[in-house]
Length: 490
Image 1 (cartoon, rainbow, N blue to C red):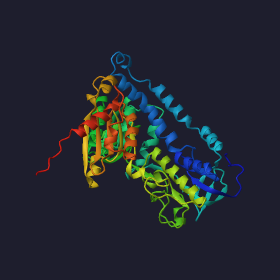
Image 2: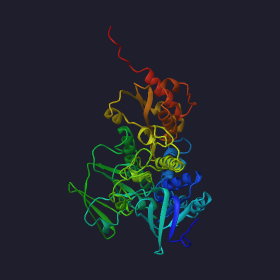
Image 3: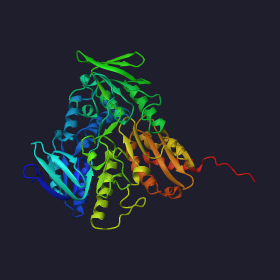
Image 4: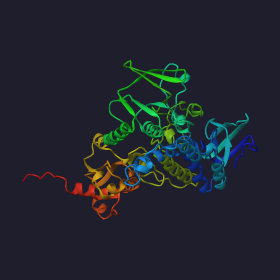
């Protein structure tokens, strides 16, 4: 329930959660399900970044763009989707998917699972203590019998450029919530947010210029072919991609943004989006009261307990711990942490073994991610480069997705690629990447294979349906089986 008006000056709960995004909600839900009393303190909208400024609105913007691109490759449908998108309808749908930036439904859900809500700004105030300042200016002191979980997430990291505030740059929040399509948009960055927002706004009618500081291509943490395919499609859609481009200064004059590059070149646009990283929201949560440094990432063990703080009471869950900055991975951590908090509260043993009930092993072994561009990128586990750096003995198996019956059915001129990384010492798949239209739905099968350490010999018995894109699994296994194997002398 919302206890803003009736909350006494001091309250005690089993678990206090700072931050009411999907991660905080899941920590509190798991605590309540275990019979513990729990409260969430949230200063903004319950449901957090993902619901209102990230996952939900961004995918609502991207879905029509990607669906049209797919439909343009389907005979008999291509002419029907030749015109521009109805941008006003797309933005209206985006608003609906973001619940019009109201959180009544989230509040009702929280009440239904028996978790209290306090609106306000929370700060740690020592061991197991949280001080809250409500919007009305009232102070509330919360004491946690068992645990405090910091689930405050991250915010956009902006570069240190003189006068940047006066330019009113977009961050991911403005990019997902803008109420009009800019005629010209500069996107600074080459990571996931940059490519998704470039795809969305180019598809809605903006003339997009991407400025990427590095020379290594888009999506630098993924397989190179993934970024190359996204770059090709962005260029075909009309975007201008510039690599090795560093921003020296920005200024806004008469409504226009003028960007000066380090090489002296200039770009003029109506809006500029900086998608250049994330920073933890820990600057004003009272870390100094428990011996930690404000503004730092919160380092945790595999059960999401904060290291460097005595006792088993302080947890940091989700993006704020810098383990895997993805909503679904944060919710996974929340389930792990919630179970560990409940076990400790009951005096039960905590299972800290890999893949144990209280160990977030997937954060380092099997993190799935989809980039919702055209084409889609889906990846889990190791890339070839990461496998090489860890010294594993692996085989890299590639397959051209255009050689599948399922992709021929999907659309004319389909382009895509799949890669499987096999650990030769274990005989299991330790990584997979798919790049192509419609590949997002391949990802969970790959995640199950990596997480379950399914032997390659057993995967032969997982028969893909014909004619689907998932038949790529059979093609990858065939390529692995038929690979050249050196014959030992003698």
